[in-house]
Amino acid sequence: MADSKIYLTDQAQVYLVTKGCPLELCPTAVLGKLSDSVLEQLTNVFIFVGRMATAAQEKQKAPSLLNFFIYNPTFGPKEGEEEKKILFYHPNEVEKNEKIRNVGLCEAIIQFTRTFSPLKPAQSLHTQKNRQFFHEPEASFWMVMVVQNPIVEKTNKDGKPAAEYQEDELLDKVYSSVLQQCYSMYKLFNGTFLKTIEYGGVEALKNRLEKFFHRYLQTLHLQSCDLLDIFGGISFFPLDKMTYLKIQSFINRMEESLDIVKYTAFLYNDQLIWSGLEQDDMRILYKYLTTSLFPRYIEPELAGRDSPIRAEMPGNLQHYGRFLTGPYDLSDPDVKFRFPKIFVNTDDTYEELHLIVYKAMSAVVCFMVDASVLPSPEFCRKLDSLVGPHLTMLASEICEQYNINRRISGSEKEPQFKFIYFNHMNLAEKSTIHMRKTPSVSLTSVHPDLMKILGDINNDFTRADEDEEIIVKAMSDYWVVGKKSDQRELYVILNQKNANLIEVNEEVKKLCATQFSNIFFLD
Image (cartoon, rainbow, N blue to C red; front, side, top):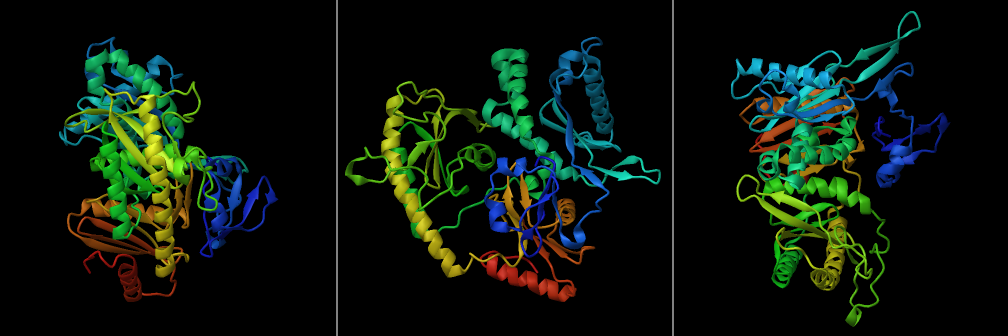
């Protein structure tokens, strides 16, 4: 479903039609449990959403990646050396002269705009057919992403197809954030451009860029990008104090027993509970874990477990633990004990670490070890026997406590309000609009037009220094409310056709009272 989007009606039901054959009514719960691969295999899916359905004669083409390149203008300053500037170019099949011409054009645009804004040159360039985004992550290193505008294919009066480019559909801030994430993800696994050149020269940097972005760009699904990509936030798991203290105690004991561990992070149900990393490092690591690593190992949790008990564990302790990075099967004599390397604190101490990810049921603990120390087979077996049983027991307790809290609060019901919340101070993010958000699938419960309004409101907030509130009445009779208060942003979508401003404001106050009772929002 690479070029398809899923919209849900207010009753949370959709009709799917695949290759002209109607399928049965599909409830939200079923759609939410479908894997990304299944959703992507449903080709030519049309979802009818009442009056929001588009005309059958129109075919829509989602935004797509045209070019992606990285260059440094100082590497080829003389005429005839222009190709030396180019460090990476996608697609690679493009003729050399065209690569040089495109890079030269971007260089000229950036230099021209420096005349008017020396510290903040061009960030994007709008044309009829595409949009270019520029980012300078390190001094003189430029990343450029060229995105084709969405296309609506219509039939003109003569019956011939005509392409109409939707120039205003792309939000600059969304795709600029995607470009910045590309660099952050590269830096997490490869370090900075400059450090690579210091250790191995320009050719080493080119090889790393080619190896990383050749695979990473295939995971970019630009039609799924929205407001959450701007925030790049972290979803935190709600816990009571006692359970949180048990987790803190568990982490302290593990770090004391496994003395080579430098940093630890603890997640449950793809939500963060505790981290010893700096915020910006945890933010990008969290994105990698939840959108890339964890989806590879998704298994339905049945009867409170997702893997068999280890019969060899003494004392009848339950053990469902396993490595997600490193040795998949410790009993295999030929298993390899290799772990991915990550780079953190690159602006300060520049630390290179081994990333050990270990899972038991829905609980995941990440251990980070200094790269100079290679985790031995003995260490991995010790970690497995020590962490496995305790993490399994802790995961069961968290699950039990969470279910009790849900029953008490009544949060099992479908949320009455559609909202997105983000806190710039701790990067906390919460959304009842997104049923699932991965790079390949954006399963939202509202129409894309409303998502675009959210992006426009966020853009207005960026330009304003003071706290403010914006209320919009959409053409589809929905009300969209944005509140910015003390580094926090809240976006609410209400389906109340006959409501007035006062009633809408009262509904938002009710939401704040029920969902954010411990957070102060300015009225």
